[in-house]
Structures are given as structure tokens and as C-alpha cells.
Amino acid sequence: MKSIGILLGVPLLSAGMLGIAGCASVINDVTQTLRVDAVTSTGQSIEGAACVAFNDRGMAAFQSGGAHLVRRSASSLHVTCTHPGQPPALGIATSRGNAGLAGNLVIGGLVGAAVDHSRGTAYTYPEWIRVEFGKALLFDRHLEKAGRPVVGYAAGTDPPMNISTTPGCMYQVGGPRC
Image (cartoon, rainbow, N blue to C red; front, side, top):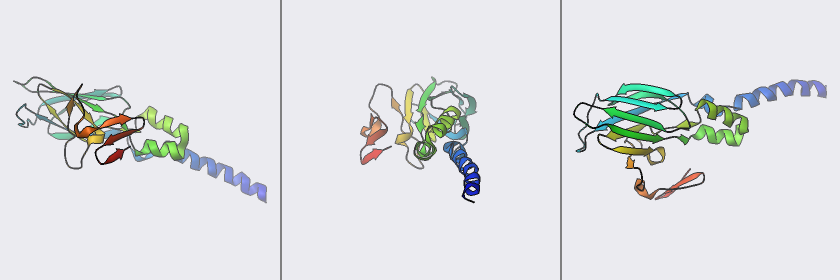
């Protein structure tokens, strides 16, 4: 009788482990929504600027002033917006591991993390960025505040809010954010 329970338990346990593997793939799609606004150097919003976003997984063309789907990846997302009479607006959105990746490392193990990494579902970009014509700005999801665009900063300058990186964590005023 005990051997029947073991025989039935092994396939059920295996099915459960396979369900856990790829946790971020279950939670997150391979795409995410990104809102891109474009502004002039004086802060005037320009809706309808022609924008292109690309990473190692693909490219998306759209107009500024709305939310659009982009492909998730471990690589940064490069955004370029153009509008007649304005110099190009450039942005680089940093890809960060999301909760699905952390869950895989704790529950699903390396197999689940590898699946989600290869699909890109383990990563997330900022949800809303505001590029500025004539500038190249960096955008980090760790600077995200609900209902507002992520503050961009120039390469080679310190990120806003006194953020510095350490292995596995970002520290900012008010405590760590991992």
C-alpha cells in the first residue's frame, strides 16, 4: 500500500515542481506596458512624437503621449523620439529583476530562474518615462513612484535621491530597495 502512495506521489510532486519552475513566466507576460512622454527643454509636452524602443528582443514603434507594449529583457531598453524642429530625445530604461525572479530563486530554483531569464519575464522596465528633446537620459525602475514618470538623469551624473548600488540592492534615502 505504501508503494502505491509513493508511485502516485512522485508524478504529483513532479507536476507541482514543474508548475513552480518559471514562476515569473506565470506571473508576467513577455511584454510590459511602457508609457513614453516627450517634452521640450522648457518642459512643454509634445504628444505624437515618433518614438522607437528597442532591446535585444525586438523593436516597437509608437507615438509619445501614450502607453505601448515593449518586449521584456535583461538588457536595457533604448528609446528614441523625434519631432520636427526638435533634436532627438534619447532614453535608456534599465532592466531590473522583478518579484517573479526573486520567487524563482527562493521556490523554483535555478531551473525556473533560467527559464524566466531566457524568456525575459523575470525583468521589468520603468512603467512611465519622460524623455527630453536634446538630451540623453537614464531611467531606473528603482526611482519609480506611483502615478508619476520616473525621473531621468544624465549619464555620468549621480542618480536623483542619493541612490547608490550594492550587490543585489539599491539603497536610497529612507532605506534599501531590493
